[in-house]
Structure formats: structure tokens, C-alpha cells
Amino acid sequence: MTRSHLYTEALKTGRPVFAVAPMIDWTDRHCRYFHRQISQHALLYTEMVVADAIIHGPRERLLSFDTAEHPVALQLGGSDPDKLVKAVEIAAPYGYDEINLNVGCPSDRVQSGTFGVCLMLTPETVAACVAAMKAVTSLPVTVKCRIGVDEQEPELALPELLDRVLDAGADAIWIHARKAWLKGLSPKENREIPPLDYEIVYRMKQARPDVFIGINGGIQTLDQAAEHLRHVDGVMLGRAAYQNAGVLADVDHRFFGEAQSEADWDGLRDRMMDYAARHIAAGGRLQQVARHMVGLFTGLPGARRYRQVLSTDAVKPGAGPEVIAAAFAVVDFSAGDITTVQEAVGA
Image (cartoon, rainbow, N blue to C red):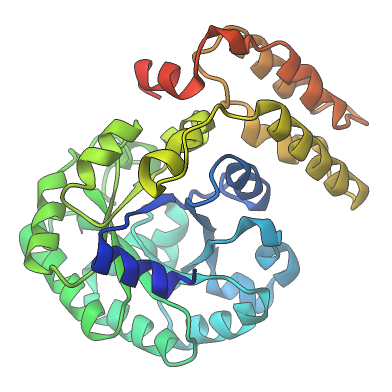
């Protein structure tokens, strides 16, 4: 199912969209491959890739991915419509399912380049970027934003942004339900200190019933995700899904109607060992794959030792896929269902 069909299906039938958020330095292609082995239906996002980097940098390293990752969206950073168009055209042969424009990242990098969440201050620029990208791709073009930035009043700024980008042709909006403060807060503090305001996101959806609106920010469990889906069309988990990836094991059953079954951890182990072997054979290192797997078994007996094995042994010179097998071997899977355990500890 293409992304355009997915968003259309969500609006038409109520079928939700569950996504893992784009996270700089985290959701690279190895992370996405790992997450895809746990959930077949979650929508996965790349890290934010700056348009200038695609135009002038190592395109293959920035854009290549395993076909198993589908559905996967490319998140772009930038504020120049012409550069974003060029980036979209360069990315086209790689076969992404969606193009997403970052209007929410508060990092120093985006502030110096006047994009990311800085674009909340110039909604006309965001609209111009969306319109330009829509003109050169048949893929869905979506926007991920905050509810406001600095002294903006969200009740005024957010609807103006939404209306402008929707008029420009945006296919879906993902909203991180916090303001960003560029003056005085670090990127980490911007993920934690500004209060969450889920209700404003709900109101944006109520005022636009024919528009796909998804929610992000502070969502820790699938129960919380299900509650949000009573009000919006999609839900996006970020650090909760990364730091406790086992929470993804119940996504396909909870939100996509798949039969409930025990997780096949042996199968996951073997698939990741095979993937790691291929990556190492191509010149990569085990640690580049294993670092994304560290939080998998949070809450189960042996999880601490599992983390230690992956964190220490995977970085040793010549480390191979057998490290993954050794890590899995120390986990006590008889202690209970991992998704139940993780819900209980607030995964």
C-alpha cells in the first residue's frame, strides 16, 4: 500500500497510521531494518537529511536503504524550495514512500540554517516548499511541526501554518504537541520542558475532519497511543520506541488487525545476525547495527546483561554476528510477554 493510499485509507475507514518518529543520529537504515523485523506495518522515517547534503554530499550513504524497510519516509530539512526540489529529484530513484518536511526540529543545526522549527515563524515559506515539492513528485508530501515556537500563540500560529500548507497540497500533518523555545532551551530540554498540549492537536483535527492529522510527543505506551487514536488519525512514538523497541512487537496486532501470537525472538535474532553479517561483509562494523538493539528487552530478566554484551562486545575489533546470539542467550524469555512487561514499566 502506498502512502497516499494509507492516508486516504485512514480518513476513509479509520485505519490508523502508527509511526516511529524521525530522530537525528538514531533512525538510520540499520535502526529501521531492526524495527521492521518487529513490526511489519509501522511507518518508519529516516533521520532528517538536509537538502544541501543530498545535493552536495555522499548521496548513496545518505539515501540508500534495504527494501525490507518499506514503508519508509524520507524526512528532509531545508527552507529553499529550489534546493528541496533538487533533493526530491535526486532521492526519487531510491524508492521512498513519502517525503516529509521537518518543521519541528529545534537543534542548533537547524537554527543556524533557518529551517526545522524556525520555519514555524514563516508559514508562507513552508507552503512554498510544499508546493514546489508536490510539483515534482507523485509521492505524498507531508509536514511534521510543533504547535508553536518561542513567543508564538499556538492557537493562532498552528492553524495558520496548517491552512497554508494544506492549501499548498500537503497530504498529511504530524504535530509534536509541544512548543519549541529557541531562546534558552537546549534541544534535549525542548523535548522535555515545554508542556505537552494534546488538546490543541485534537482541536486541529476537529476543525479539519477531512485532513489526516497525527500526533507525536511524550507518548510512552501502546495504551496511550490507542487513547490518542480516539481523537486523531495517526500516532507517532519516538524515544519510547527506540529505547524500548520491544513495544513495537504488539503494534501489528493492536492497530492493524494481525493475529496475536508470541513474538519470534529466535527468528529476530537470526534475521539480525544475517543482516549484520551482510553489513560487515560490505565493510561495516557490528556496532553500527547492534547499538540500535540495546533497549529491546527492557523489563525482562537478563536485560541488563543483554545490554552489556551488545554495548561492550559489539565494539571490539573483529566483532561478528555471534555477539548478537550471545546477547539473546542471556535473556529469560520465560518471565512473561515482553509487551505486557514493557507496558507495566512504562516503556
